[in-house]
Image: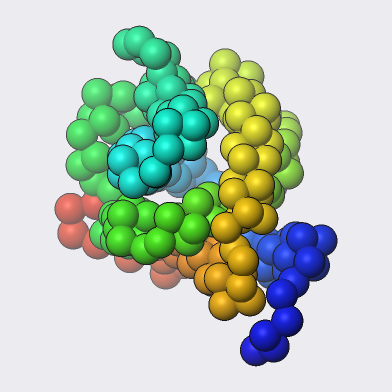
Amino acid sequence: MSDRLLSPSDLRAALHAIGDERYHIHHPFHRMLHDGRLTRAQVQAWALNRYYYQSRIPAKDATLLARLPTAELRRAWRSRLEDHDGTGPGLGGVARWLKLAEGVGLDPAHVETTEGILPGTRFAVDAYVAFVRDRSVLEAVASSLTEMFSPTIIAERVSGMLANYDFITKETLAYFTPRLTQAPKDVNFALAYVDEHARTRAQQEQVLAALRFKCNVLWSQLDALHYAYVEPGRVPPGAFVPTA
């Protein structure tokens, strides 16, 4: 590794290169989801397991919020909690994901218990929460930068699912619409934080490693889904068993 400090544009290019290689838009399970090659039961398995990730994002953000040193930073990060938890019952991204789960035929009350999720899902998501809790604030903030790539996968996912599944409606996928504006806002904050606080090449490398880690978290969740519900189709004990 060179000791030369990367310029902001070079650091952005390095971050985008990680996304180009590692973001889960390239995962075979996502390709199947987008292309309409999953059964309804497999889509249900995706919605159920992804709920655990969605539900733990506010816990991750609350953990980081407690570590931020200034009111200005805490106010900025607090909006993420409101985006996901909402400002009242039935509001926010987590509630909208439960509506998505209901729309694909799941009982939202059961989904909310997180019973039946895959062990691989739980391990990956819990590892992400632990990463944000235990690593430096810089690394924790940088790990959120997968949001740089989310508008592309959201647009692809929504268009593909609407085109290819007759049980999917725009109302089912309402979770994704606010994310198209929330994610870019969050990215701008995180990039500005990285620019200010990654002052050495070693710290810039920590930023890049944090993004690789987060990409691995997202990828491994789809690995678990593919193994259990596509190929070889080995559902672990206690996990959701499709009936459709």
